[in-house]
Image (cartoon, rainbow, N blue to C red; front, side, top):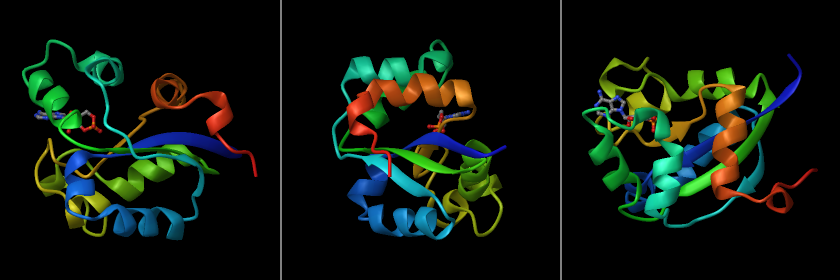
Length: 141
Ligand code: CMP
């Protein structure tokens, strides 16, 4: 396995609800190292690139509208087995179906407003983090 990187985004409702600190606390306590972090408002182009695999699905419009509705916090994280580890910490897509103690179960509002997005594979990490970060913005320490 070894050290691996993953990519996550705190969604607009998380920033709006002032839960940035709460979610980052859980991520840091789980052992992730933050290599890059910023606050920004995603453009429509960035949102469409992020969610390109969902284009054409019934919820696609709502997904794009939501992720562009306010500031978000994209980040690059490092840990052993980071992709899988973060997905376990976050829980299932639907907060109502997520395991107790997961971020989405504890803090999520709905499938769309499910607190945080996370890359689902190494390939997704490679593709998604480049939408929001240049190589120079990812710190090696
Ligand atoms: P996320 O991890 O950001 O990746 C894609 C998002 O699509 C997902 O979280 C949900 O917010 C959303 N999503 C997935 N399935 C559905 C669905 N059936 N209805 C509405 N939104 C969905």
